[in-house]
Length: 249
Image 1 (tube, rainbow, N blue to C red):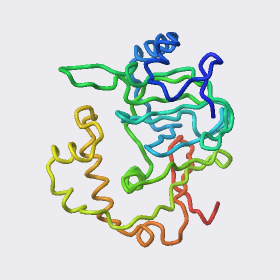
Image 2: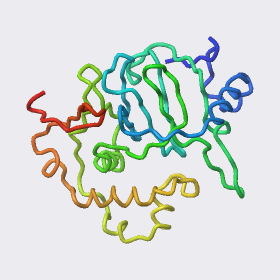
Image 3: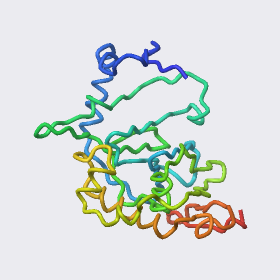
Image 4: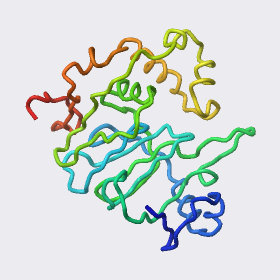
């Protein structure tokens, strides 16, 4: 899967700064993206993608109009257009917009922060823009628990049926979960974040909710997925996710 900029293959072994200097238009596009204020994306028509998840759809999708993800500090959000399933892609990838590392960095009192924490893409127009998401569901805690227990990259959406499919996921009791729940915010931030000085304000509360979920469900094969079937959601008439019975699919 070669990466190309303006038809030229990128040497991925070289520092990103070399690529930026070799292709100054990437910096200009990053400046343009950074200059846009973050839009608040409401849940209607939204498919939110968490860490270690991916979703693929088309402009003909009648349920999803926006794909998005946020809370990226040391993570990367990748948007691929018109190239099929990203994990199975054998073709060239042409880099159009690049807004990571030094192109998405601000410094305050010697501490580095991302300028853009989240991105959304309009699947009808292919427009990308900075975004935040008040709602990250459905099954936010379940999906976060899957991540915290070491999930692989997971496809969560079936564009043919326009269904969001969560699980089935399986894990064992989370190590020292009671210990972590007893820790103060500073300890959780310092030990369970890859970027403790740059996390958004809700990071600790999110981690506590995920740890609590893991404590309540040490064996999801019994409490969450006894039938070994995914939790399936479809958009209702209001454009919101609604769980449907898998036996009727």
